[in-house]
Amino acid sequence: MRHETEESRSKTESTTWQDVSVLESFNAAMKPLADFTGVLSGETYVTVSSVKPVLELIKGDLHSPSPDDRTLTASIKQNISTMLTEKYSSPAIQDFLTKATI
Image (cartoon, rainbow, N blue to C red; front, side, top):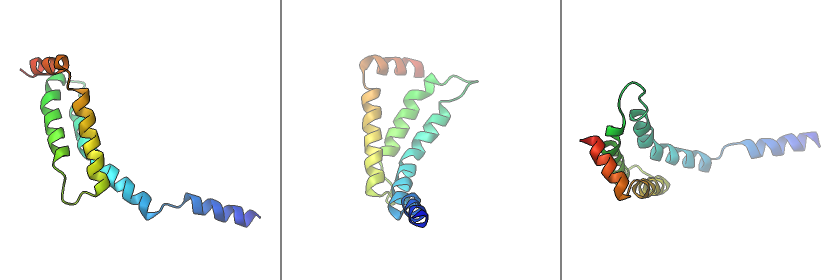
């Protein structure tokens, strides 16, 4: 009984190639966002003026998939781009970001 329990536990804990594939796709899609976060996380410099230019760069990066991107990676990038567009699309936010960049 104990052997069967340990065996079934080890089967459920092992990583499959599908798991690795999903994680690789997620990592590839999140890389530009990690760069974006790094740029905007400065404590000793003004960052609000960087939001609009960096946002445009990140959306451009998300819209131009790499030839190596898997379908899942491209889908994640598209969803992130859509979310960012919706989040920053209000005229008030756009006006604020434009003024902060000038």
